[in-house]
Amino acid sequence: MAPRTVAPFGPQHPVFPEPIQLKITYEDEKVVNVVPAIGYGHRGIEKACELNEYQKNIYLCERICGICSCIHGISYCEVVERLWPIDVPPRAKYLRTIWSEMSRTHSHLLWLGLMADAFGFESMFMQFWRIREKVLDLLEMTTGQRVTHSVSVIGGVRRDIDDEQKKKCIKVLMEVRKESEALINVFINDYTVKARTVGKGVLTKEQAIALGCTGPHLRASGVKEDCRMQGLQAYGDLGFEPIVEKDGDSYARSVVRCRELLQAIDLQLEAFSKMPEGEIAVRPKGNPPANEAFYRAEQPRGEVVYYAKGNGTRNLERLHVRTPTYANIPSLLVMLPGCELPDVPVIIHSLDPCISCTER
Amino acid sequence: MGIINTSRIKSPWIMHFDNSSCNGCDIEVLACLTPLYDVERFGIVNMGNPKHADVLVVTGPVNRRTARVLKNLYAQVPDPKMVIAVGTCACSGGVFHNCYNILGGVDKVIPVDVYVPGCAAKPEAIIDGVVLALQKLSKALGVAK
Image 1 (cartoon, rainbow over the protein chains, first blue to last red):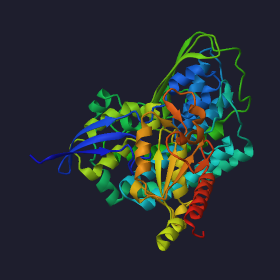
Image 2: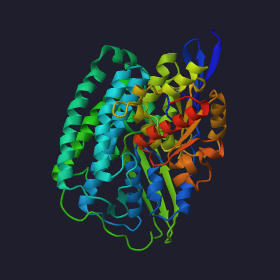
Image 3: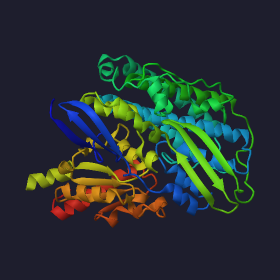
Image 4: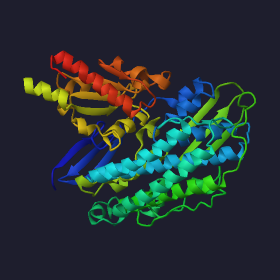
């Protein structure tokens, strides 16, 4: 038997933008065991949400994660609205859907870039991030901020998209779609890219279900499960169909995200064409009543669950958030053992880890 | 030492460390390196190794667990070094000020030279912060910028 080496991977590591530690045991260059150590990003947001007034929690919930911040803010508003319950105007529902899908577009472009960087294709990383800046410009134009938008409020949304902005959005989204298609063609068909991803980090359908994986990670293993299938917000009108792949390796996870990127752009274009006129917000009456509510939403990384309990005062009794990466990290213990040392960053990135979500 | 100090100012290497931020500032720091802002044309390169870095870019508030990691990294960056705190929460704790696991801004643990406010700090502001840090460094070294 070859001698074993234990190497720490993180908390500060060039591959991760965020702090997480993996203690990896190697036999020569082969991984035999992985122990993840989390807790570097823990802030205590859930407790702070009980201390703040309920309207101010939107800003805190958006900062659970900066990449999927838009959907965190919207999900918090949706769960608190369910305490009364408040019925949101249809135009606000469409606007929320558009911003959710826009942030999914930017998140998937970001991930595709980081994935390209993880297997050493730096020029593709730069190209994906070049396209991503166009989407960020759209978000800045429509919401006023590049990263954290704070556009959703309890009872609706804070800003409307007028006709001029709508035309600009449609034009830029078509450009983004065309440019991403060309790059995705390289990502999916290139021989060298396939050599790094096909058959790496395989997770079977049974394992994915048993480990409780969510999101593109689960769909890449052949499970048809997506929170957008509930038909909430405007998804019911848009004819949404989840994207599923069978193989469960890093390549399948890349393909799912590539196809979801194009699908997200199509959903936005369709939502723009079907968006009804009308009010964008209703004012909530009084404080959240003593009641409990759940809300599930599909983030770029998977399913996020919000639970809120009100007690009739300005503060919530309890807010709990279950985030997608927390559910996906156990699958690393199945995918990493048996792989080679250079494949470790690729497999970890194929999960799309978001540590600030995980630890809150 | 003349040529080394001149190249320190001409081509500073930065190292980015995320304490426990929301990722917003981290992706903006990365966006600085990508085609639209492209700071590599000024010789600014992002390094993974603290021993190669001149400038430590820190995002996010310090929590009880990352405080030790941050002190350790700061000690590994060779002198003369600059520390830039990017984002409101790295400056003061920001939106996380009343979270139980947060100690506060980066200056609670290590000395900070430049503060870049903003939530999330825009790439233009981050680049401006790096330029300010370099002016400060060139003054300290007595090198003309």
